[in-house]
Image 1 (cartoon, rainbow, N blue to C red):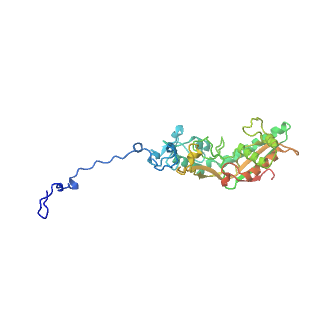
Image 2 (cartoon, rainbow, N blue to C red):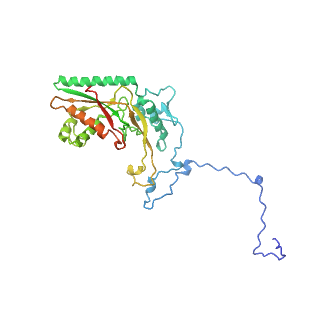
Image 3 (spheres, rainbow, N blue to C red):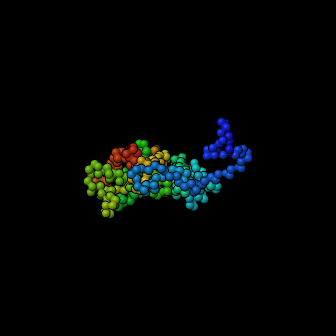
Length: 355
């Protein structure tokens, strides 16, 4: 106990015990290193924001922005499946393994529909971006020489189709249009034929960009209906609409629109950012707490396509001329493909037959 300066004896109830001297830092034992937690130990970080009117099940609709949502392996990796023996991705570029080639002459149908890079969350975003970059830089494998060969093959097929009809006593007419995007064109949004949802329709053999004939027929039907054309005439020429229950073919064939062969079709990497992805997926009501999910896709930005129309025609009833007028009006007024409300899909039409 300490003594009061006034000389009075200390009060045992209020007296403080003497403190032992603190050891120096050099004399203290070393602290054990702190273990670094792994993503599996930490788990996804929970979002503490909670709307007042949300139920107890809203947690599954909120993506976890913490470390648990990051890929465990964010490094070069092989493609999924058997193609992993051929290709791998180093976050920026898709590269071939030793002994293989991958470049301008690769088939885009195989690359864009069969190649995927995955992590534990599904499709690896860096792998998808690398595939889209290959498509943009290598023009989806469009070789000018092969483009010219395919255009000549299409010309021969059309001539044979016309000659075959005339041998049977049918006056078959061929009409050719060329269409060029005024800005951009998207014809494959929502296509589930590929794991990456690239947003562009590819030819089933060559893997080049195209406009499906079914898309042109649907747009032509819509334009004719808006102009008040008789529905019976439209059904006779183009065939019945889907899910109508009727089963008969139309009189006019609308072939898939292929590149003209003069120059490759150019594509760019475009993107859309839905802000209420769970709502669009049908999992939850829209809410401001949903995180935006950017999604990249390919869009045609330059180049021309050839539209071939084949069918019967004479001086009185010319079905091919009717479809040519409907298709031209649809391309210029309604737009082709997706996102026409945002300016995509409007095409300049040029009639090569009348030259």
